[in-house]
Length: 267
Length: 164
Ligand SMILES: Cc1cc2nc3c(=O)[nH]c(=O)nc-3n(C[C@H](O)[C@H](O)[C@H](O)COP(=O)(O)OP(=O)(O)OC[C@H]3O[C@@H](n4cnc5c(N)ncnc54)[C@H](O)[C@@H]3O)c2cc1C
Ligand code: FES
Ligand code: FES
Image (cartoon, rainbow over all chains, first blue to last red):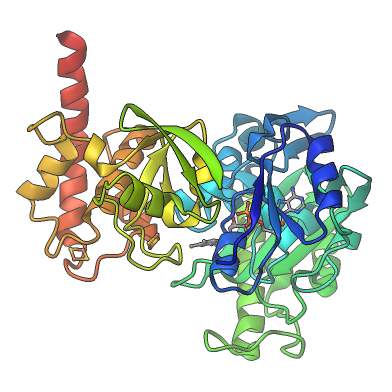
């Protein structure tokens, strides 16, 4: 790891000022992506601005028809939250499937979303529920936020403060885990809120998380696993690596989508 | 350099550290508590698991400065003098270790598991919860037995303590 200065601001404004002052500074949240990257010297920030002391970013609450989760809520906070379990059980389940218990104690929703790893789970929930990502500057709909693998609409020094998830009528996540890394080889989040039907896919696409339109249309006719019988997205556009080739991933997406709908409808 | 103060195994410690210092490095090299092991240094193996504010974390993937103001518990803090913690005793009884490299992390993870989920743990739960801990010797079977027994003994022990 290269040397860096360390800052631990006590509110969002201070954090923003520190990021503005130090050009090559980076935010550290749970550090479970950033620290490994720094150890490999793939990142060498001049300073780290640690959001760990910002308890204001840790809350989880129901606000009207949405669940609003602070950026510093850990995966374990979300997995064990009564508010989330009652309003969007599929989201609690997704958090429970991330990594292992120790990873879930440190990793945060804000860090996961800002990183936009093409195999990460939260991007599927954001797109699959039509979430709004709230920063210290603006509100960004999930559709506009994820702009390609490891790429987001965030500007230099912009801080995610909260994520707002509209409460769906039905929703669930199904994930085929890479048995070694536990990231998604294919993960599908489905939801139904009135006539808004969403199928978001992570882990499989070669350009990160995406919505599978054909499946959404099929589910609009009837929201049941049967509506997706025999369907899978085209293998073109799927990722190929040592763990799985594009055809296999495309097949998995179909299977995971049916499982997610089955879980969402209690079938 | 950055100043850091934390409570480790009940004792307050303050030190000046390079901000790069990992929590695992801090407890091993600065405090000479070498029970916490570093197996992979890439957050995969769990040999480095300690508790920070009562939660199991991988100390190779946390900076010492991030633990400023926290309560840290390492494997050295579990035993009560010469008397092993019930989870440690269960690992000994069930041969839950061979070379012992993974053991401190396994035990810290197991204690965290009981703290969160209670003492009535079935085999599937234990195996699932141990996903972040790798053992290259035992084949896990005896570790799972040890955790099962240790979990039960832990409630026994706290019930006894409460009665005393
Ligand atoms: C062993 C292991 C297994 C894992 N398995 C999974 C898995 O199965 N599924 C999965 O989805 N993930 C997995 N992860 C990743 C884990 O969820 C990370 O915690 C997460 O991706 C990053 O969150 P973090 O809080 O650790 O962020 P950090 O590492 O602290 O930061 C990541 C990036 O986001 C930026 N950032 C952080 N917070 C903010 C913010 N509030 N605003 C703006 N930018 C910010 C940082 O500057 C950095 O660039 C795994 C990680 C490990 C080590
Ligand atoms: S040394 Fe920390 S997880 Fe392996
Ligand atoms: S006992 Fe040797 S690694 Fe587990």
